[in-house]
Length: 107
Ligand SMILES: [Zn+2]
Image: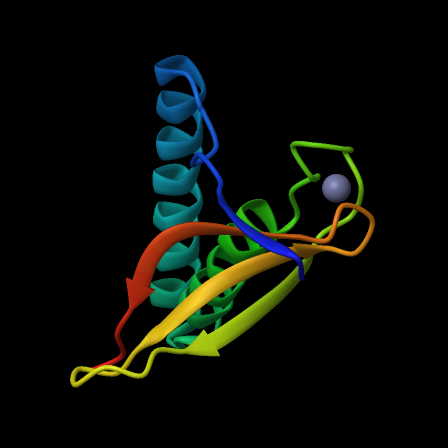
């Protein structure tokens, strides 16, 4: 990539946030209820896995702010005492590596 540029976090209005939170709570409640009824943790586990996948897709599936092209996610290790990773979204067309500037540290 020729250059590195800062990408803004996706803008979500508070109404959309409320809808997402309510839906998630309702889904979590239904999953918990089914699990209690069937005496298994399968549905709770399935719910959390699906939620994580959805968050991943929403945050990673973004168009390039410059050309609206498809971005390729990439993780790069940070050479620093604490370690961690930085997430990049590469645009092959513009040769721009978009980053949120956040260093993700796994404990
Ligand atoms: Zn682009």
